[in-house]
Image (cartoon, rainbow, N blue to C red; front, side):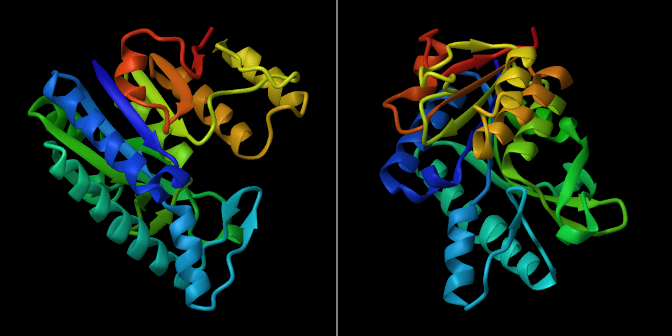
Length: 257
């Protein structure tokens, strides 16, 4: 089975959770699954910028990325966060390969909005690279940075990066691991199963907003683009990945319709 796992920034801050997920991912690869991990690192980046006396500015949930911020994005996402995660995956027994979307033209993006600076939208995914790596037992671990056709480098929202790669890789399952247990309806109850139409309605009603709205939009694009199923679930739950694959109704299952 082809699996794409997106790790949210909050999970990356919790060492015990991170190491537990590394063990789970390594076990899935050993069991014969083709696994790709996509990660961001926004919380660590904001902390780093604060230490440097640089303010973080966001517009519609996206980090404004002028040249000095882009340098920090590269240093933290493709450097510190990626290297630590790859090291922990290696310690768990996985043949993890640290990548960004720039490497071997894995992703190609265009600028989303000049007012946001170097923020990109992925338009093409070189899924062949991921197929070759995962078919031979490697675990690609991808930081959410993309290249452009003109040699530019872009900061990409991690949910959007996971959605684009999941669709291009034609993942059977794209699992968004977050700090919440799934999508909640207007009564605060977990929604076990959703379609694209359900997600649109939840967003239109204002119930899903902020980070959850972004995840629902990314999930919609993923299943419409070729991913089999998207699951949004709590990464801190014990053995979350094997339990999802074993069919437990954890989090929210998201399908095209």
